[in-house]
Length: 252
Image 1 (cartoon, rainbow, N blue to C red):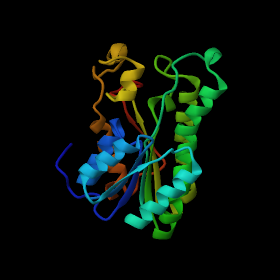
Image 2 (cartoon, rainbow, N blue to C red):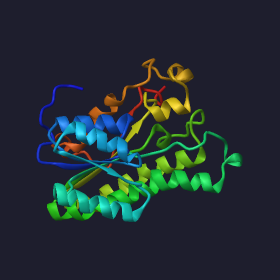
Image 3 (tube, one colour):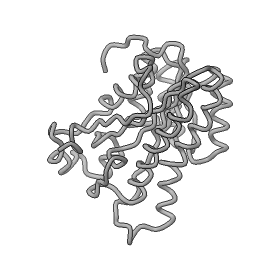
């Protein structure tokens, strides 16, 4: 990451799925830029260790994003520790089994939906009252290039449909709540070197590199730079948009 410029001083941010991969990269960058960060993940031990490393302006919480009561608990603890929340990064997500629709069960679909789509909905619903009261805020929803077009090589019907839904919800909430100063954007990473992507391909990204014009997979912090921009006041007139970070993969 580039040198910290204190772009998030005075902001309180929730970052979901923060124990590893892109979420961890976002957390480190936000803390370095001066934000107070609430880091959540089903891997509670992982986010608590990261929060301890980041210091007094970080709080790590065990959290299932698909559980409404879990979001209530996160907001109570966020308020107790740091006050109102004005930035949300809905980063938590899962791919699910990579197989065709005929072999995909309703239970498998529901599990992907619960994390990728319901979790984003519940997160936005949880933070909107704080942002409305404050006269503004920024929501960054992590989708995927699978939310721009079908990616049959490393996707499935559940993952693709939930990532399209994140894109649509982001636009809707941006349009509905722009009058309150609330900005909502979606970020669409391509192949990123994270544990989730490695599990879905292989250690080196496999044949993914061959379909990326830049010829490589991205590092997590290359997505973080976009997320950081959208969370900061530098993007004060950017809302309701898709931000693709894929090395020109879908362009090519």
